[in-house]
Image 1 (cartoon, rainbow, N blue to C red):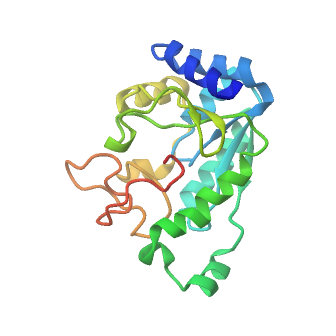
Image 2 (image 1 turned 180 degrees about the horizontal axis):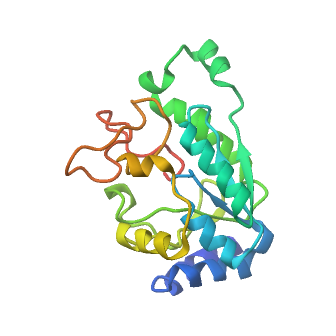
Length: 229
């Protein structure tokens, strides 16, 4: 077990009942410039938390080439108005280059491969400069996230993975957004509850009574892009 793995395991126990602000302060004090935040730009909640603990922190955004214009606009607004350094990662291939090699609409035919090429691999490259990364995962989002630790060891990337709002509910998020005036993706006002890539096979509005991430890869059995697996 590496020193970072030992640190992560201990912190996961010790910080389980800590507030999101306390978890982010611990992360900032422990890792400094070796800490980043990853954001899908569905909202800027974790970026705001992190910037309060470590102004100028790197906020990593994956530009898959398939994002809604509103998502790109949210990224640009975060970069312009918050004390963070937004870093945009891109896949090795453009959408056109991917289409030429794999055929068009790979997201419909093999969404796991599409996500691997356009999200998982770019993030793997983008995190090499860091020892730890913070995400906006919450336990109430889906069954696949129900056991998300607030701090854990990420064996795939050999980094410390921090989920400061893991214990939050949607009501907690809403209250934080209102209190601090945090930027939100405009699509959330239009009925989307989880915002990913724009093809309908990737993101749609959930139906009445469906859980928040039901609109992601609807009907395919797929629940995660692969970043958090």
